[in-house]
Image (cartoon, rainbow, N blue to C red):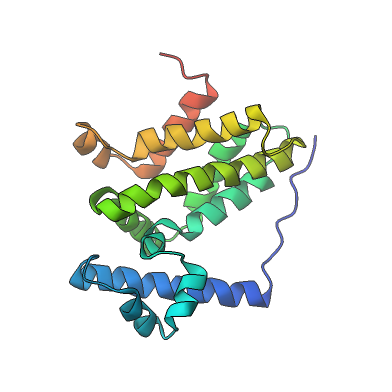
Length: 204
């Protein structure tokens, strides 16, 4: 059996960058709650986080990205690459999602729900989210390629990555009349069920 690759601990510079990124997001979300998304400017976020606007843009290309770019993606991809090579890509990502969610504390889970709500309700963020979904497909494709020894642009690799993102979107982004039903269930349960359905071949 092939062993999962060791996960390296981030260096001091990476940890400092992570703290700065987290501080910017924390203050941004607080300001969004207090005065609304539209009324909050990048300058206000930068001032609250004690960084310059140029530093803000080094971490987040747009104000929308403060909501969309979170640490969960990093956790999930890292956990994905750490799964046993004997697992299929979908099974590995399903296990990685469970691992990533399991590593989040109550505050982090609440923040994840808050950013999901902002994505659904703020038109600018919702529009920007489409670019983020495309980026996420690329990130998962690169990780899947490293696991399989194939090229990230391989058709099958991109298809698998797109399918993973697609079923998660379908399960967690209620853009239709079933929004109330979806909101009543747990996000992790919905993601796990979506990936289980994909792993089974999407039977109807």
